[in-house]
Image 1 (cartoon, helix red, strand yellow):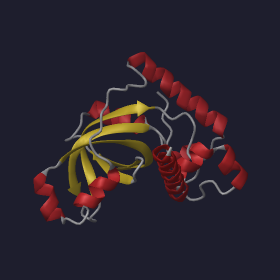
Image 2 (cartoon, rainbow, N blue to C red):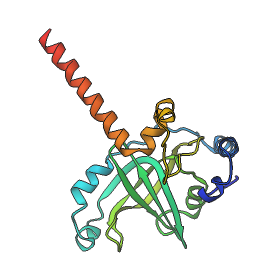
Image 3 (cartoon, rainbow, N blue to C red):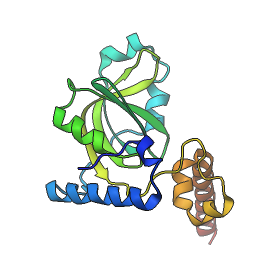
Image 4 (cartoon, rainbow, N blue to C red):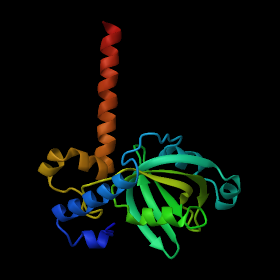
Length: 200
């Protein structure tokens, strides 16, 4: 399976990136179900931060609080035998931590082939890093959806207004302000609908 890290992808055009990711999807389909729909999360990122974010490392770590969370991979980095990823769900972001003590080498190898934008489901326990970041120590992780198109640059995002409207789905992935506005707008419209129904 061809592997591409973000630095390599930056040197390729979008068609080349899509071709490489399609090849990865083809390999996945030969091994297992490419788009499993049996993963059920029990937590959202914002809820975990709200409930446990204020606890110190010493208070949180011994509790080994179990979580099942899913989201789109926005960042990924390797540090020796350990790997970190930041995933984003509908509510916000949270960090994942993987090493060969928590998961098998086979899973780590799979994880190293996954790309930014892929949607993953992870099972693990909460802890805080030495820098105080709330993190899930992963014991299981699965690729739920393969992303075929690259995300916009995390530094630039979508700056062109016309592109934002034509590729709304990308803007909603990359831009937290756009995502919050979209959610609030939906909630307002729903409230107006509910009012009209009740007044009928």
